[in-house]
Image (cartoon, rainbow, N blue to C red; front, side, top):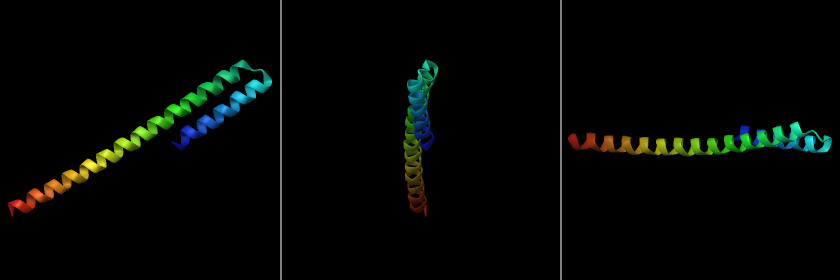
Length: 73
Protein backbone atom coordinates (compact mmCIF):
# COMPACT_ATOMS: atom_id res chain seq x y z
CA UNK A 1 0.00 0.00 0.00
CA UNK A 2 2.92 2.30 0.62
CA UNK A 3 4.04 1.81 -2.99
CA UNK A 4 0.59 2.92 -4.13
CA UNK A 5 0.81 6.09 -2.04
CA UNK A 6 4.30 6.78 -3.40
CA UNK A 7 3.02 6.43 -6.96
CA UNK A 8 0.11 8.73 -6.24
CA UNK A 9 2.40 11.38 -4.78
CA UNK A 10 4.92 11.10 -7.62
CA UNK A 11 2.09 11.25 -10.16
CA UNK A 12 0.64 14.34 -8.55
CA UNK A 13 4.06 16.03 -8.63
CA UNK A 14 4.48 15.14 -12.31
CA UNK A 15 0.99 16.36 -13.13
CA UNK A 16 1.63 19.68 -11.36
CA UNK A 17 4.97 20.05 -13.14
CA UNK A 18 3.15 19.51 -16.42
CA UNK A 19 0.52 22.08 -15.56
CA UNK A 20 3.15 24.65 -14.59
CA UNK A 21 5.24 24.06 -17.72
CA UNK A 22 2.29 23.49 -20.05
CA UNK A 23 3.56 20.00 -20.88
CA UNK A 24 0.45 17.95 -21.72
CA UNK A 25 2.46 14.71 -21.75
CA UNK A 26 3.53 15.20 -18.11
CA UNK A 27 -0.05 16.02 -17.12
CA UNK A 28 -1.41 12.83 -18.67
CA UNK A 29 1.44 10.68 -17.39
CA UNK A 30 1.05 12.13 -13.91
CA UNK A 31 -2.66 11.42 -13.89
CA UNK A 32 -2.02 7.87 -15.11
CA UNK A 33 0.60 7.34 -12.40
CA UNK A 34 -1.85 8.54 -9.76
CA UNK A 35 -4.50 6.13 -11.04
CA UNK A 36 -1.99 3.30 -11.02
CA UNK A 37 -1.09 4.16 -7.44
CA UNK A 38 -4.74 4.06 -6.39
CA UNK A 39 -5.12 0.66 -8.02
CA UNK A 40 -1.99 -0.65 -6.26
CA UNK A 41 -3.31 0.61 -2.96
CA UNK A 42 -6.73 -1.04 -3.40
CA UNK A 43 -5.17 -4.30 -4.55
CA UNK A 44 -2.87 -4.23 -1.51
CA UNK A 45 -5.83 -3.73 0.82
CA UNK A 46 -7.77 -6.55 -0.82
CA UNK A 47 -4.73 -8.83 -0.61
CA UNK A 48 -4.30 -8.09 3.09
CA UNK A 49 -7.97 -8.72 3.73
CA UNK A 50 -7.84 -12.07 1.92
CA UNK A 51 -4.66 -13.10 3.72
CA UNK A 52 -6.28 -12.25 7.04
CA UNK A 53 -9.33 -14.33 6.21
CA UNK A 54 -7.14 -17.26 5.10
CA UNK A 55 -5.24 -17.14 8.40
CA UNK A 56 -8.52 -16.99 10.30
CA UNK A 57 -9.84 -20.04 8.46
CA UNK A 58 -6.58 -21.93 9.02
CA UNK A 59 -6.93 -21.29 12.74
CA UNK A 60 -10.49 -22.55 12.74
CA UNK A 61 -9.47 -25.71 10.85
CA UNK A 62 -6.61 -26.36 13.25
CA UNK A 63 -8.97 -25.97 16.18
CA UNK A 64 -11.52 -28.36 14.65
CA UNK A 65 -8.80 -30.90 13.84
CA UNK A 66 -7.53 -30.71 17.40
CA UNK A 67 -11.02 -31.20 18.78
CA UNK A 68 -11.58 -34.17 16.49
CA UNK A 69 -8.32 -35.78 17.71
CA UNK A 70 -9.36 -35.32 21.33
CA UNK A 71 -12.71 -37.02 20.68
CA UNK A 72 -10.94 -40.06 19.22
CA UNK A 73 -8.75 -40.51 22.27
